[in-house]
Length: 281
Image (tube, rainbow, N blue to C red):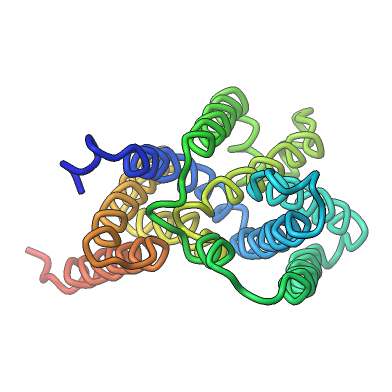
C-alpha cells in the first residue's frame, strides 16, 4: 500500500484521512472517557447512520438531493442528536444517562425506516457502516481536514476549561466557567468527529476508535497529557495498520482497525499483569 499511495489518488485520500482521524478521535475520546460519556459515541453514530440512510433515500426520490454527499446530512443529524442529548440531560437532571439510550434508540429507529424505504442495504450504505478504503474522495478529505483543524483549535483554546469540567464540574462552575456553553461545544465536536470518522472506520465501529486507544493508554499513562499522547499514538497505530491490512486482505478497514486496537489493549493489559507479578527486589 505504501508504494501504491503515490500512484492512486483514492489511496492518498484514504491514508491522509486516516491519519487525521487517528489524531482527533482519540484526542476527543480522552475527554469523553474521563467524563464517563463513552456510550455517547454509539448514540451519535446511530443518529449519523439515520442521516446517511435519509440522504441515500432522498437522493433516489428527489433531484435536489441527487448529487449531495450523504456525509453532509449525516453530520447534520449527528449535530442535532448532540443537541437533543444535551437538552434531555437538562430535562432528566437526576438521571442524565437516560438521554443517551433515548437518542440511540431514536437513531436506530429512524435509520431502519429510511433503510426500508430505500429498499434495503446497498453498496453505498455498507461502505458507511463498516468503512471503505476506496470511498474517500478529495472533498471528503477537505471536509475532514477542516473538522480536524476546528476540533484541535477548540481543544487547545479551551483545554483548561475542558480539563476542569472533566474532573470536577462543580468546582469548574464555581470558578465562573460557562459550563453549559462549553459542554454544548464539546457535544457538537463529538458529533462532527463521529461523522468525519465514518468514511474510514464505519458508523458502527467509530466509537471503538474513540475509546479503545484511551482505555489502553490509561493503563500505563502517568498523567492526563500523557494519556492524550499515548491515545493518539495507539490510535494512529491502529488506523495505519488497519488500513494497510484492509488493503492487502481486501477487508473493510473498520474491522481491521478495531481488531488492532483491541490487540494493543490486550497487549498492554498483559504487560501490566506481568509487571505486577514480578518479585520486588
